[in-house]
Amino acid sequence: MTDDRIVPVTMPKWGLSMQLGKITSWVVAEGEEVRVGDDLADIETEKITGTLEAADAGTVRRIIARVGEDVPVSGTIALIAPAEVGDDALDAAVAQARAVIDAGVPDDAAGAPELQTADVGGRKISYAGAGQDGEVILLVHGYGGDRNSWLFLQEPLAANYRVYALDLPGHGTSAKDVGDGTLGVLADAVTGVLDAVLISGGADRAHLVGHSLGGAVALAVAAGDPGRIASLTLLESVESTGRLVVVDEAHPRCNIATDISALAARKAFGALRAPIEMVTAPHTPVPFSTALEDIYIPDAQRVVNAVKTVTGWTR
Image 1: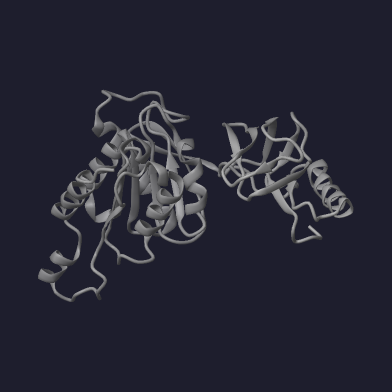
Image 2: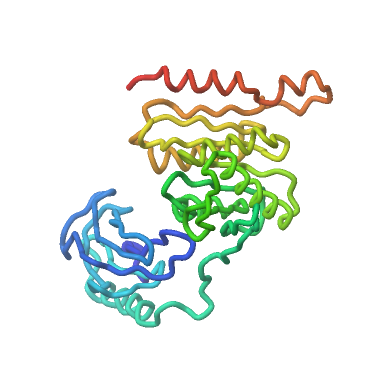
């Protein structure tokens, strides 16, 4: 944009595989004033349909993308600017935006993460990873979901971690055979994928995150082999419970627990009915004593106490 007062409204990236979005309807019109959080447009992708909210306040001066038109991710679909910005500057910005939209998705644009499979007990378990560096995180979805349940979480975490999401047996593209349907079958599937991602990444441990049923599965995996679990985060949906406890053996600063807490606060702040509790190691050097290590590492009682703390809050 040639004028710093012009604020572009761009096509969001809702998921790692998203390359295009389609405007299905505009909620606003040119000349309307919008506030942060106001609905701007309804957008459809290959996987989901959602409403784009305004990230900036101001006057909608130009609507660029047409209803029914495919727009590449990050392409400018509208312009917000004060009345003082002239038509010439706006027309120049529109021309630049139209050139990007008309060009479509670049040939070298990154596609969806490569789908991989692990053979666990004769069942093919599907999983996909994102991120090149950092510690390993494995995401386990809930009942009726699949790996795409983590679309909005996997990408931001992948900026600093290697993040994998799987399809449990009977879900997504994994084998439909669920055996006797017990928690053990599901936990074995997660353990099999955990083996695969740790070996391929040259890591010893992974952070395990489970939602709803996935939380129970993650807990079973951690109980079966706690030495390979760096941290365990169980989400029964922050929006439904209004509470979150994150457990991590690392220091209480700059760790996976702080990243997850920050994401939860940003995405579900209005739903929180209690402060987020983090159960971590103390902010001290790791002791060279077996007895002190037992005190240093978070134990079950500290987790229980944290749960009691958040459930004791009312708002």
